[in-house]
Length: 495
Image 1 (cartoon, one colour):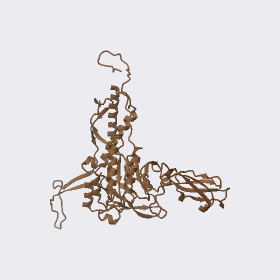
Image 2 (cartoon, rainbow, N blue to C red):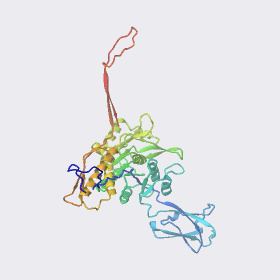
Image 3 (cartoon, rainbow, N blue to C red):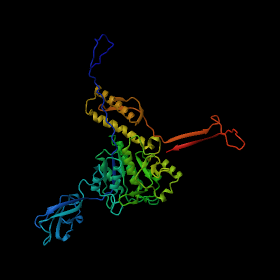
Image 4 (cartoon, rainbow, N blue to C red):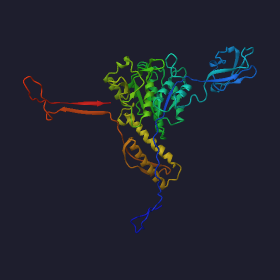
């Protein structure tokens, strides 16, 4: 509709109402980061079937993929029945195994009593990403995090628990590794499985049991570079699948962290160091020595619980009982400066508190401020997420490219940028340009510039004693005497 020109001639007094071509923009709101923990799991689930058994009609257990050696049969009192009193038959292989049970010939088990058949199994969904919002559901699926004696029984459950203590959601992606030890192949294979579902913002790999020393580094650097390659590939796809990773290593790893950071050199990867921490297990009332990947999971939970424009620098890491002395003694100021400058995210004791905090939330790419500061990387991702969600929500993909559509795209872009400013994700922006691509008419190019909200890392305080603001009167036995004094200096507070 053509807008009325109120300067073109006489219009009678009154209220004039017109429908405008561009609707009031409706933009999407940013959501909390979704964290995926990737690592070796116990490899099975547990289930119990209840049957009245006979020697002539086999009963089929409800789950497929049952491990025959794990089957335990008990009666109503909990008494375990000897294995030679019943017969197990399995057909198929892997997760498709079908299992039946019946009484053996001459069995003394009764046919009039229900028996409890408990077993371990692995189904088709076990090695796929699974979403959890409660710790108990997580434990029921992947096992309790601690053994009865207080050791770590399920690393993936413990890491998931640390995330859920700070976030409302965690995705668990088990690797196909066996024996509870991670491998490079298992971790990278899990990334491929994650790619199919999308929607993951932060990855925390668990390189459980992976060794690495200066002389024999093993796959330590490769694990970091594989993570960086996956994150970079997701970002390059341009479909809003920007993914970042936070990585820590096993307690015994002594490969130089700055060497690993240099070989990784990616703004989407944070390498947490040191690799050894005390963790207090309240159930067993004892302190365990745990690997750096548990702190990495905690850092991911912290990021998910706070606004996206806040980074990791000086964030306190609760739940850990300090850094072992043999590691702490190596953390001199020059060495920590060396690591931070190289792109290592150093965890250190917070002065005067006894707690741990992040010295500087840097990525493994310290080339410049934008690539070094993890908060700026995540703010860039938030811009992408906001535009992706806003345009998808508008439902205009597939519509004809008309002048009205271009107006809508422009209006939505401006509204999204204003929202990002209000959330302190950007400090300012240039007006968006919306143009239909002359070479690909089904493409509309939206371009703009923005100023980031830089993190505060250094406060530089300069001070001096001025002789013009007053006098200094020292106490003397002979009376009052005036004296002047001058002193100048500077103080530097930094992250």
